Length: 333
Image 1 (cartoon, rainbow, N blue to C red):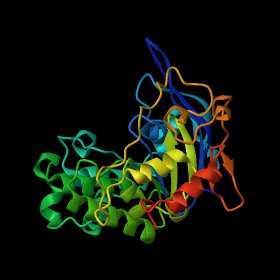
Image 2: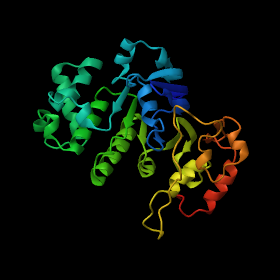
Image 3: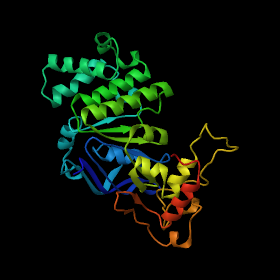
Image 4: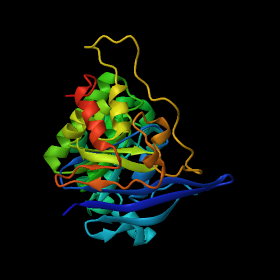
């Protein structure tokens, strides 16, 4: 059974211009000890999906439908008090920018120790010892000195390591990562990704990783779900989807990744722009930008269909897309 099961999740944001359908019918499963990457262009609904899981949607966003089951409990029907108890102990979150997520007037060691005291019932001394252990585990040197540091006294990479230590401090079963390496340079980003991967394997923690970077998904995750205009259009094991994408949007994303080993005159790009989420088109939402679009793509909603091996795709011409991918040297092998 999956540790986290999202079914037909819908998130709406009321605006003066109408209702924005930020997440529209998203479904996926996350199994124990596995990592799932949510990928797609900016504004496709990745972060809103992630924040809806523990009930952290920004105002005035709201869950308009669907269920989010964690260990058999529907979080959409759980009280705010119940969600507060769950956050940290069952589900933890790592945000994109630690300077806005960390308390600027609280020493980082105390912020790490807070979780074990509140959720695990540890004494102050025990919580401090656990915080120091976690600081070492996430690669923070000179732990005793940095335990007493404030967030502004640490580098961006160290602050992100503190965020990871906080996420791990209450021994959660699921960690939600909202583009935690976007603001870091590539060297620190690589270290953080390897750290998350190692900690997931050693602790058996499940991870949902939101990113727009396919290379991050390839390095960090076993499974991937590709989002477009508030919906998942393709999902399955990373190796299978990167080797043979069956949705034209996934194929277009892979073609747009620069490859230093192949000489190209021009970088590939996706023409056009995503639809407005307050005025969604009929039919396949990617059709106006798709080279495989036919009249049948515009006639009604295209369902996400799962095959016998667990791959899912929402495309009427998936076989044709897969054939194109097999002929394209730009697709990751």
